[in-house]
Image (cartoon, rainbow, N blue to C red; front, side, top):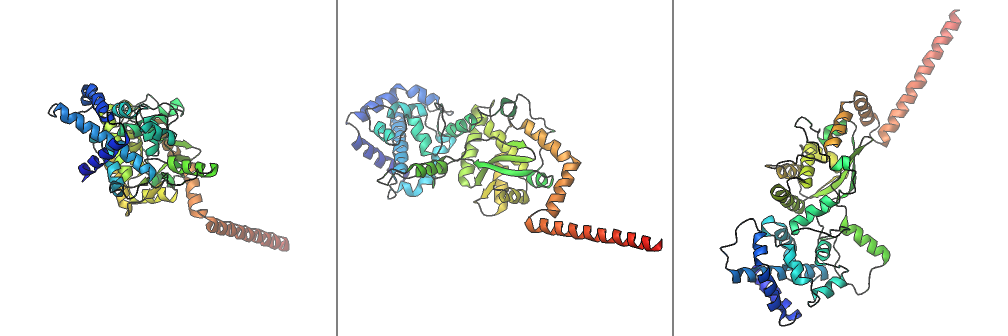
Length: 390
């Protein structure tokens, strides 16, 4: 069915461009054929040149037509009924089409794509694709394909973080381990969400079907809904662990799994996403950990059973080599020092038992006040008895 839709999309595209445009695009692909073939890990020598060029052309047109369709909200399209499935296929590491060929094919003013990008206020093809996935980055983006796009955005979001925190040259020692979320909570650590980690939210991306432009306030709300946060930065300060929250669902698993696979194969020196999952594996080891993080707004469970969230996070770490320079090293040391403090643990227990909520705290204060009155009354009685005895 997908191959049939690709042909339909290609036919639609052919009606939108000049008659010789398809011929020119084939020539561009033929000129870059060797470079395209070299972009794939597995050999493509067995694919005949003519068939390979035709395959790349149809895939490129399908991708751009699909992303355009998602932007204008053509809900009657059969492919749009399977939008999430198509996006999953686009993220799969083994399905990646090099971005440079998309850029070569569709950046020219000779094609209608330039008009569409101006309509969506996207100066380049990469900006348009970032926007279509609800991602944003201020500087000129430089990534290889869709999977690398997510890795690149997450990594670049760490550039404004202090160097000592995020790009430490220290190795993560095997004896430095974090407690899980439940034990950290018992030790008095508070959890706070810095915002939703963006791995694309289909509902949040607006469809351009309205005839009037959004107001400034509406535009601000749209951007906030679309872009969320992109940083993997985790900070521990004054007993509070601030980290990005995430929705535990199939899309989160799909994106992170493929980004990690790409880091393992190609960017082993800076596996920021891998290190983030390594950190998350320390936090989430049981159902109770998920419940603690959910109560604090760090995890939203869209999978159903709590145990499924634990399995999802733990399975992302299976067979994965952690980076030698982890951005969470110093934060791990600070957390361990906090948890070893007897004073802080006792104070945390006191707050959890006697001041866990307003009513418990009020009851505790009332009981303390009554105890104080009783003590004062007892002392007064003793003094009075002593005076009478004299």
